[in-house]
Image (cartoon, rainbow, N blue to C red):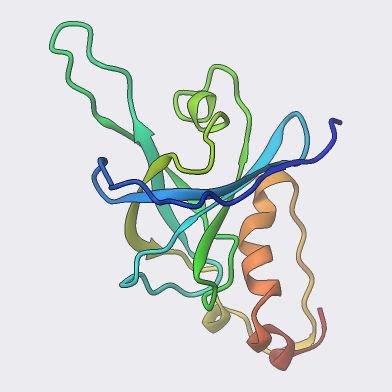
Length: 160
């Protein structure tokens, strides 16, 4: 395990150059295999805690045409629905098509964020009860992090 390192918010936001671009505001490397990052949130984006969106970067240029295509993957939103920014967790996969690049992002960089949240691990799906148990490892913690920061979670359960 390595020491936690955080890169803080940048002062200026660059003009978006990617489709559906959002600006990276901070990056935290929790271990040698896990990191999180925060990005600006589109004003029009509405989501329920526990949902996920497609995020990514532009892929490498095609060897013959030179054109680039977006390389997108589903990522659970770790921030609560009321947050002004969006937070995501990712693992570091050296040969991963997206994560090999994503693990090197820095504040001020841009990512692609498709603003169509989906998912079923939301408050509407949680029936009230005595206890809410949540089990996860690694990036599987992200939707739980979102739900744990929502006051509504604590209204539905005696213990979380």
